[in-house]
Length: 238
Image (cartoon, rainbow, N blue to C red; front, side, top):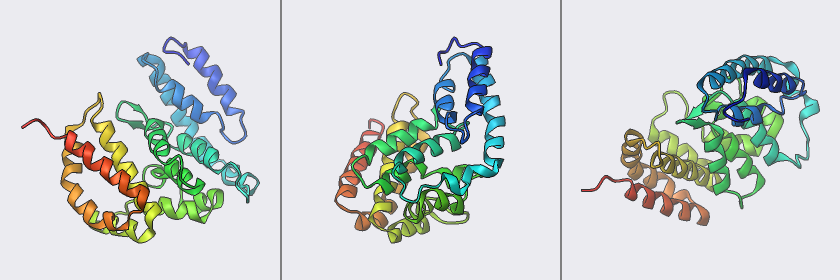
């Protein structure tokens, strides 16, 4: 959908997507239309997506057994679609939240499917109140859900406790967290540079390394090295 889309065109697209039995077009809608540079159209879309998001999650058939493929041959595809729909009205800086999910997933593209699926889903429990661990397990299985739960910071949990719980969850959880942090740092250094977050990440790095570095696998080590290099590049000139 282009920035010049009219409200009638957007409304027609919303109407078509509403007819999908599982909200399958919602992710595409959110991805395309929240990028609009036309402020009026963008606000129109976000308003209607917000209304639809509530309708979608309240539908009894969204987590129904008929939608759960026990063999899960399309695990990564389904996780991607689900996560982008769940984050549909949220932003990642100035971009749709899907931008961050795609970045994290791209970094682990050679990992097992459970890790790639968790890469897309890693923020849904923390940021999307309609999503529950039980619902994730019904749809994506125990292994994926355990990874997502490990990466979800709990209320009242210190950073040290959070990192330690990730380490306990195993190398795949550690690698996902390092990848998530690497993508966050790169986003902060982009055109939407966020020096406040970069300072926070630099402050946390010694604690993160002291707990997570011993729990990383070979791929996690390369991610950790990349994270160190990006944080070093982020330092202001002396």
